[in-house]
Amino acid sequence: MERFEAFCGRIQRMIADEKTMSRKIENGRELVSELLSRQDWFFEYLKKMILEPSSFESRRPGIWPNEYTLYRSPERSFVVLAYIWDAKLADIIHDHGSWGIIGTLCGKLGERKYERTDDGKREGCAELRETGHGVCGPGETTFVRPLNKGIHAMDNPTDGIAASINVYGKTIRQGYIQFFDPEKKTVTRVFPPRTLREVLAVKTLAAIDPSRAEGVLREALGATRPPQLMQEYEAALLKLRS
Ligand SMILES: [Fe+2]
Image (cartoon, rainbow, N blue to C red; front, side):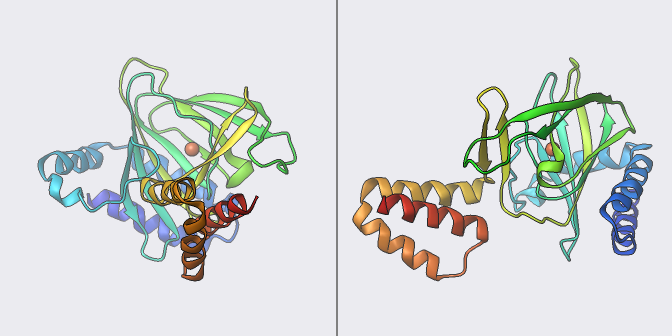
């Protein structure tokens, strides 16, 4: 894993040195390509995961079930994730809370990019237009910018396995991503499992006993909570009053 540790050190220095997002993405893509020129370090990671599963138990599950956290920088300036794509696996069109670089380690990955054509003012509604598609083979990279500038969907179009190594920069919108359905013209907030459990609990309290739920929601809002949860509490309170 020395190769991977050296890579993380390079990404860290590069992010600190480069001032603009474009330069971070450009230089980051080169570093990711270089990392992907060898695959043995990732073999070692998978080997450890299989032979020493207890050392991975404390890792927080993310939104995507095929996601593996490889590294989180202590100052939260970047994270390195791996995604393993089973044959024909395709993700839902989504956005990101940060810029990101996606590099194919093995197999092939397809990507479709989209732009939002509505004004974003109607809650839950979104209209998209496809702006391009491509395929990344081993060692090749693509990238996303945060929020509406990086709406895309990726898939493994082959009958074999594929893996990607992704680097994401500092998050500017924390705690959730958005899924888009261009046919239904909808956008939905999607939370990681731990947050989702709390969001669902909030909604269920109100459904069971609205009069008591209001007090609980107010008490929760009085404590420090992550902003994405505050929004959910406030929305639940509004709904109770309507
Ligand atoms: Fe993505």
